[in-house]
Amino acid sequence: MQKGIRAIFDGCKACRGVMYILTKLLQLRDASLCQFNNQVLGLHTTLSTLRHLEMNILTPKQSGEFISKFAKNVFILPDGIKKLANEVAEGIKNKQICIDGFSQHELHPQKADESSVDWIFFVDTLNFCFWSANENTKWEVIWNGKTHTGYFALCASVRRALQDGIPVTDPKFYSQVTSAELDHILRSDNPNAKVPLLEDRVTCLHQVGKILMEKYMGSFVMCLKECNNSAQNLLQLIVQEFPCFRDEADFQGHRVAIYKRAQILIGDIWACFRGEGLGHFSDIDTITMFADYRVPQVLVHYGVLKYSDELMELLKSDKLLENGSENEVEIRGCSIQAVDLVADEARKLLKSQGHSDLIVSSILIDHFLWDYRRKHAAMLELIPFHKTMSIFY
Image (cartoon, rainbow, N blue to C red; front, side, top):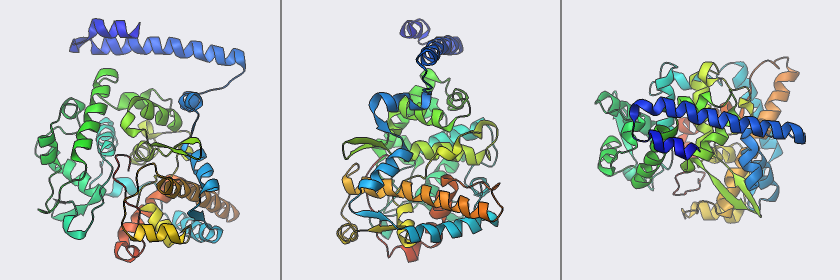
């Protein structure tokens, strides 16, 4: 029936709002029937768990615990957990680790409104694979006289495009952006470098842009409004509706979910809005750290993670790890579990010191570790990080 309605209104821009409302009414009807059936059966299944139950997929938190139990080459060290938890607890007490860090960066949105949501969605759609083989080929973007690399080069390129009058964060634009246009938008100020995986980025933008235009009135804000302030509901919506965020792998006979970009999208909106308004999620503490290629490097530095000699030699050789390979999944899954354990330990410490009211989350710990890596980049280069060509991180 929904397809029939879509056919009637297809191509009529003036009717998009009507189509959206009718489609949502049908979805509400279906959701009500589902809720009724659940009550009759004595079940309490929520949107956030439906796909995982149907497909037998472990959530990121479950995945971290499962992967760490069966990992062969990555190990979590209790002494390292305690050491890092102590530092995190101190940082939270003196407010060096807090939710305000996101908005304090000059390249991030400076106000919390709907345009900021769409800015964050665009950026996190492209928030993957910035590493380079050497310094000479590092992707760099200059903004306001400062040279930025990696994720912040992406943010700087968005600022530059908007200043040049390019509506880069509008899905009407990026759902049809050409490779040449995106290449220009993401152009490097290092003549020896280009942004990696350009064609994959174009594909991702086309995919998410078209879905936003067809189903969500051209704005990710509509996705937020469907999720009843639940981070888990939003997480499931993201990975159901936008396949390029579906960061999953097979490990020891189970389907595990990492969802780095989907979770960082939620975390960035939460931080931008300081946990209020569109950024209020009643279950934000269920979001895990964002398993990339840099945070595990810092966890090794702190003695939280330890690699087997075999894996360490492999990483030192700079051999690419395939996305979904056993070693890659172990590094990412153990990182999730390790940061969850650090968060638990930091909460215990703060509670014992009379600070049980202070917020401890894996998101804030991830922010701290990621910032630590950037501040101590030269020192940490002594520890090899795993390299993967992937759209997922």
